[in-house]
Image (cartoon, rainbow, N blue to C red):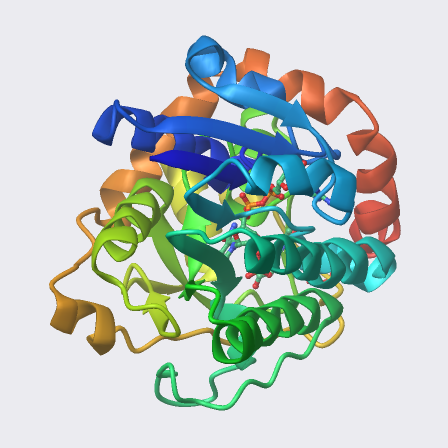
Length: 336
Ligand code: NAD
Ligand code: TYD
């Protein structure tokens, strides 16, 4: 199988490539990645000689065409992914997440693929006041990131209906694990705690996310590549809902750091209160997550403790300007 992994130098993409090489040594994998601030070749260091790598943009036809014409399976992880950045600068979200997905789908229309996996997100449903969203729930994205992802999600579906592109859409909950960029919540809390810096908690910290270990997500994707039906959408979740404040406290406790490092800061505008997925559809097919958050989080904390050489260069680069812009005034006016 010739496999094209877009966004394969990011968090989930790089974990997926490593997982897939282990599970399917016969796959010929090529990564297409623009290497934005979130893409990092160091994420692929140990497997670099076993894959092809092309630096390029999914929104650029001439980057995409030759690669799509030479693949059987395309998995589209490439996206701008951070809600907080989408609030400050939405341009790249619209361009990559919507236009980029369109360019990939157009190329897939010209060349018959075995499968086109569109990595969507649970955030397209919006906030779950009560209950859990099924795949039939209406989409109600409420920030520029989730709105762009919803656009891509429906565009992928439209290419299945209209042009017969064998699209499978997955909507996964919040991932955690190794190689996640330190601006995202869990790695930010871990690395700040390791540096004895405050952990910024938006508002009351009682927002709820469902957490899944990235390798469980990779396993679910591999399962759906084999057993999913084109034209179908599948929710994927860890089934482990927790308040943000609980996660932050657990990280501090695990590292032996004081709870006084927690700082409640001004909330994210339009912050979705809770994400929650009903995963019966995937369970009926026979897939279930394997990892408990308690164990996965401990391992993840240990990974960041041992891999300072991975995250310190990221945190000392342009990250500092981002951090100042995102948290500077919030932290100096932190809430009780
Ligand atoms: P990430 O930000 O860590 O990685 C994104 C990757 O895409 C980076 O390597 C980046 O360089 C690349 N990229 C960005 N724009 C590009 C472009 N125009 N052309 C080519 N490459 C480009 O993101 P992630 O957390 O690994 O998320 C991967 C996918 O999974 C995304 O589609 C995201 O929406 C989805 N998702 C993420 C989560 C999560 O919790 N992280 C949950 C559900 C769904
Ligand atoms: P994030 O990792 O950005 O994922 P998402 O918003 O896509 O779910 O954030 C996870 C949760 O943590 C979310 O409710 C926002 C919250 N959060 C904070 O409280 N402080 C922070 O500094 C960050 C980055 C996130």
